[in-house]
Image (cartoon, rainbow, N blue to C red; front, side, top):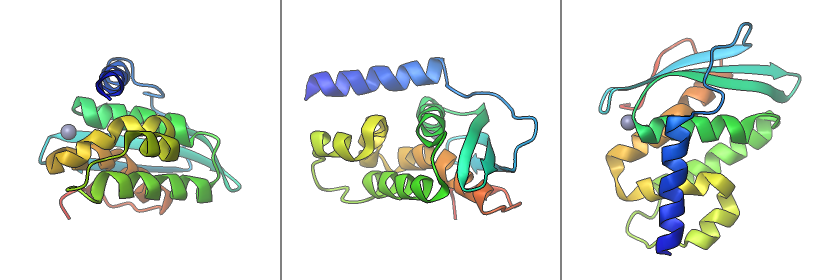
Amino acid sequence: MDDLRTLYQELIVDHNRKPRNFRSMDHPSHLANGNNPLCGDRIIVFVKVEGDQIVDISFQGEGCAISTASASLMTQQLKGKSLAEAKAIFQNFHDTVTSNMGEKLDLDETAKKLGKLAVLAGVRSFPSRVKCATLPWHTMQGALENSTEEFTTEH
Ligand code: ZN
């Protein structure tokens, strides 16, 4: 268990240091700004959808290690997925980091369900960190819904 936690910690550090898909996009079909004033995380998520598929997704911004790692992992997970698949992944991830705070997390089970995203499941013990981890996802969803409003985790 401790080895797994150490591995997760290292993955978060790695994605924070070298975020994947950290770039702007020339002609995104969707984009949105996200803002987490509690922590100071700011993010822009760019998405290119063709037909029903996310053919490209990237992000820029400045945030803490958790929000940056979450955004990086998110872009890796969602690239190439259909919109329905992306929605299901978001739902799974969101449920894991927000529910059953009191219960002990079964890491094996979580890893099966979420793949690499399981590295972020530990934030559920820290409500303020949950907002950091979910910000990129809410922003992505806002982008797909063509929301022009800035997304803030406070509401
Ligand atoms: Zn943060």
